[in-house]
Image 1: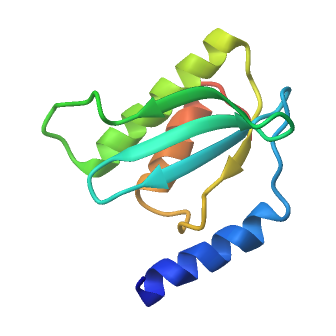
Image 2: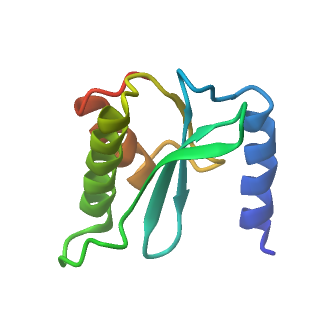
Length: 114
């Protein structure tokens, strides 16, 4: 694994010591690959994934940031359907910048509170 990947894992472990999702306020976690972005709402007390959204279904030729924005809108809409209004944001060791920030901003604009 590269030094950059090891750094992200180290940061991820440090963050996860303090971030914990419950059924009332699940953890919104983000994973980004080179091409796609994925987000989940996780209840850590039971280990269940409540909502999943990803950019796999988006086939339009737009920038990665716009795809991340649409994924954030999608996860917020699915969360509303399940009845979730408030979450804990887990950036998963990534910098709060670029695609991660776009996803978070879109989820906030759609009504998720964090």
